Image (cartoon, rainbow, N blue to C red):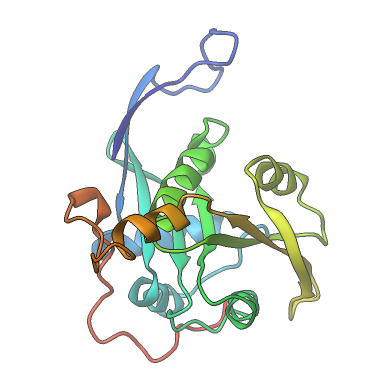
Amino acid sequence: MAFAVNNRCHNGQPSLKRLKLSMLLMIRDVLEAELPQVLALNNRVGPSILPLTAERLRGLYANAVYFRVAEIDGELAGFLIALDPQSQYESPNFRWFQSHYANFVYIDRIVVAARFRRHGLGRIFYADVQSFAELRAPYLACEIFLEPRDDAAVLFHGTYGFREVGQQTMADERRVGLLMKELCSFPWVQQTYFAAGQAALPELPWLVARRPAPNPPRHAQTV
């Protein structure tokens, strides 16, 4: 999926950031060779995103149903990783959703490089993962930090249609809000393509699910 991005402020004036006025943005599946870049980007973010080791990232690569990157003019600008209930993953937040809901797509993490923030890339990622999820599950799930409170994340998810369905305290004593968004298109997809004699979605390139890596580890490591 490719976009032309006009890098201007809402008032039509050029952005103060020293980026090109026109950028080519592509959202695509991650390549295995890009995992070191993904790891470095993840671990540069700070306390808002839990750090990863190379082994843990490979576990996610093997188990994720959605693992896409944003490429802007050939540069890796961000990524989003999501899992479903069949994924082998020991995160306590993922396990909470797994114990309460039969079918969902869980956003484990989204990371955007510092120089590409405040340009709507997070919403582009969320629109893309929602388009992926609503063909496969009735809910999109994630968590946000409540202690310390991340108001940017609270506002972002609240205005995107998420609601809190639970809370829990993590091992590092930070409290998280567990969020769900109902995907209203899912019942239509089920009725149209699975209850009408068809056993699968149409064979269209943009509907193809990510193929997990061969011989995934038994469990992705807890992060």
